[in-house]
Image (tube, rainbow, N blue to C red; front, side):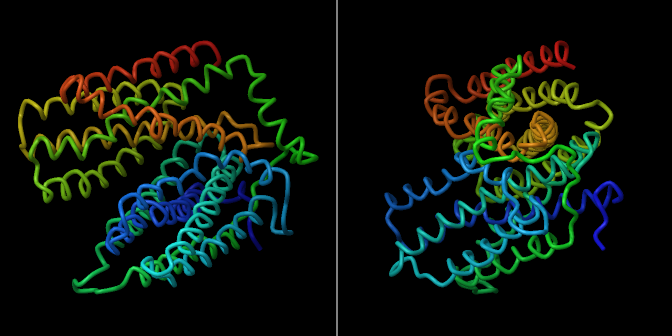
Length: 409
């Protein structure tokens, strides 16, 4: 007998949330960075590899089919669980199918399968975001956002750096195809968990028709007095952090840090410090509440972004790089916890899948669109002024958070 979510202990809800985050994060790089690495190692031309970036459009467009997830219940398992199980079965199957292809002889069917995986992965993200919103009490949203990102980052580590490191002529000598078979098997962890978790307890009924599921979420959100301000804030809060992050690898090269320095300090140490930040953020949000946490974490996030300019003064010193990376990753992790909790609390539980997908799409603008100007900014400003400017770009989001807290909370 599956207990309802209200009868579970906090640690049980957090464990479920973390596994769902793992399930969400695992397919992401398998259609992105890891997939491109596979194509590059098979000597696929750069033009084709560049086009593969469009596979990720599914993650930006998922709000278009999210109303189906809010409207329909596929099986007696429940509205959220039925879609969750369907998408995870599809991901296990299509990831395994990806592992049967050779890019040099079967590139077209491989790309088509990859697009299908990205579609189901983006759909799963919408369901998991909605599930978390409906499954967790409001006072656990911050910690839940941290646990989701914990699972997500661990999954990305397995499907990215560690997975790629297993392929080749080293001690393990597995093939790309075997890597994808292994990732399909790991995907079953989330699938098995989905059978045993409770369907969220939601008092509000789902939309009565598909038309309602399409129109009502947008009507409900955009008739709020602060709707445009909230969407602007969603774009602005992590804008400076996103823009600076796109240029960090180039910055490390220009500052003459070695690959070993970057790999150990910026990637490995950075991963653990970001996990520390996510944990601290989740704990502190419960004490500070979401809006106050957004303001405090936003200030720290801005300072840590600007702090990278100190590396232009110290030169390629490992201790300086470690300080900058640890400071940035901890504060960014804290900011991410508060931001995800904030977006979840903005959604109406009747249409949480659609509204969260809409907010996530707007949030991705900073990463996907405005970050495209980061190279021009560095050319015009230089590295030190670039990082200071990115820190200043966080100020509008902080001021909006103060205004929202004072006016609407």
